[in-house]
Image (cartoon, rainbow over all chains, first blue to last red):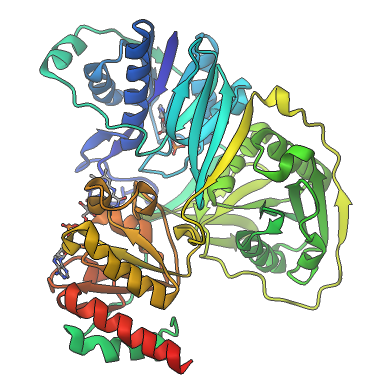
Length: 252
Length: 326
Ligand SMILES: Cc1cc2nc3c(=O)[nH]c(=O)nc-3n(C[C@H](O)[C@H](O)[C@H](O)COP(=O)(O)OP(=O)(O)OC[C@H]3O[C@@H](n4cnc5c(N)ncnc54)[C@H](O)[C@@H]3O)c2cc1C
Ligand SMILES: Nc1ncnc2c1ncn2[C@@H]1O[C@H](COP(=O)(O)O)[C@@H](O)[C@H]1O
């Protein structure tokens, strides 16, 4: 069974955000690039399914500039079999552009499970997985926190997190799934894995993106919250805290 | 041109997030013009006529026996059918669990852009501009749309629900759609609700969250007691969730839930950037921490420097006393 995991290279969440001189994008100079944390759960799950079956292939796919190959190598070091790099240049594409390019590539592959992260922690869009599913006409379960595959691998039962509980959804393969934290505990790449990854193939393909459906007008630091104040020390501060919450903030 | 609002219902009741989206639609209509039309997918009418007072002039209702719970394919078809009928300039969703799943599907079907999880909308030179937090809330992106309609999902609890106005009873028009659940190849087997009676973090008016400084899971009893006094829902930092003290569903932050309650109380939480990502759009933030240099104080409106084991019980008693006075 072929599984594809779509992974995105993102700025480390610790990154100090500096806006580039264009006023619309992140200044990349001081950025540490990492594999999107949610995508790690997706990779891990695909690997576990392959391992449980004792057969099959896990392909990782990423769209982006030349730099994303380091992230693809990380995924190969975790245990993915091979990688596809959809090569773009220029400004970061918006979700529909990404989804269209990924869907076009996936159309040519006979993947049974198409894995994604719940959302990318840079743009926090959570759009690409359902969009790809729609474009391919596949069913899709987002925010998956648990999954069981049927013995014949034609169906899966996935649990997704919603407000106040979990939805249990039965889905027929091929299907798009997006991974939530808690799905599993992703493995670290072993030294052996890192060595092996160097020899695994990355298939580079230049893509031409569709015109953007969204246009970034500006990127700016958020308006600073008006400075707060320390109302006091220890339990003695409680009466004053209650007073300000009631009389000034009017929240209790 | 019209503004279309997806009216989210759950268990046969219109959800508050739908009223928030309607409220924003009414505000937008003041500048963009045009009627505000709602579209709802449900097993039966969840009392849509009542939304006239919230500013909707017409409501389109797609019904199907399977629409008692969220049916992505059918719901998406309903919204697309409404878009084809109404030809709106803007379609608003809530960035609730349902909206975050549904809106991208509709965007892909229509081939238009979606600005997700927005915290502000503006009209500049006749163009809709959506503001959305990115990079863990460390920056705000403003986006415009190159096509129509413009799809937007709104972060829950950020936009004020539509105030009751003297709107008339709107027309509730059936919206005919073809929906075959079997063809969707995905079906909900069951919906497991969490702890009964607990208000979900994303819907809570008040949240009391505890962090690693509480030293052990047993000490969350203190947090539960304060939450009970305030009518709040309990949240947690990732450190606490990773340690297994609290379930994952309680986690607030970048890899947890994004919340915007009117009051957020952070107890013994340092205020790491990934935690702030999930709660800095709260209206009022209170921090209780023994370290005066903890970063949480930088975002807190009100801080108490002190030992949580002293401050929290005292605060609980004070709130109880306040409640008793009414
Ligand atoms: C990719 C990524 C994603 C992440 N996502 C999240 C997320 O979604 N949510 C999240 O919360 N974190 C997240 N984190 C983790 C985050 O970086 C912090 O490690 C975490 O928030 C720390 O939790 P804490 O504040 O409870 O613990 P600590 O940082 O250990 O802070 C404990 C605090 O308690 C105080 N304290 C100790 N004793 C007392 C006492 N008796 N009374 C009062 N105060 C006391 C201390 O002064 C300290 O400030 C993420 C990290 C990464 C790398
Ligand atoms: N450039 C990309 N290349 C590959 N996968 C991507 C890319 N962008 C987004 N994805 C996938 O889509 C998920 C959600 O991303 P987003 O919709 O941007 O929040 C990510 O977790 C990835 O799995």
